[in-house]
Length: 319
Ligand SMILES: [Zn+2]
Ligand SMILES: [Zn+2]
Image (cartoon, rainbow, N blue to C red):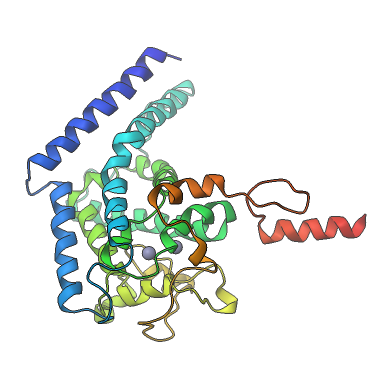
């Protein structure tokens, strides 16, 4: 392995991203993520202030500043600290690995000749469907759920809750999306408008607003639908979760995971034991790694999946 090449990639990643971020912050333009995120956040916040759904919710709601920090961290800082370097190295290593088998190019489906809107649409649908599946896994796999709990520790919904999530989720989502998207030769970030649209819908999903977009609710995720994703008391037969949609709600309607029994404006949010969940950024991001549970043998580890516990019972039965 060419160590020097990889060290150079790491160096360039830090240098490049630092310059990108400084540039984004100090030179506003129409295709600038930093200022778009800020402007759009303020716009959704103003809607919350003037047209609130829960009228007694404070303008600076519970965890407003914590979520504001998460927003900046997950959108920009994490890339600077680690993600950019890790992903550039991983992509290079993956390409080197493919080269061992004589594969030079991963692009398998050629859509460059498609009209631009067709490329948009395919990429958007594909990325959103993959995300929906990953989100389902975050709820169903116990070790992944420990990371996803950070997002579900939101007890009062507001636009900034959108980007309260553990940085590990970025790694999980991007890793799963990498191969399918590389096969068509580009990613979501390549389309500024698609990325900003998805971020806006995500902000609105968490906002203190009573919006469903009328008949479009069967296609687009919305604040009422996503509020039910965050409720504490899930129905007995849906204990893993409901309404997994990210930008689109259509997957939930197609796969029967939709659930909106009523508007649910004041439903308690979170999960069992959310009161005891860590409250600060550093505690929350280190929590899943430290989370240990003493099982019957006194060993430490992640809580077992229900079927593993079942197997354990059967083993003792036969002994
Ligand atoms: Zn979730
Ligand atoms: Zn959410």
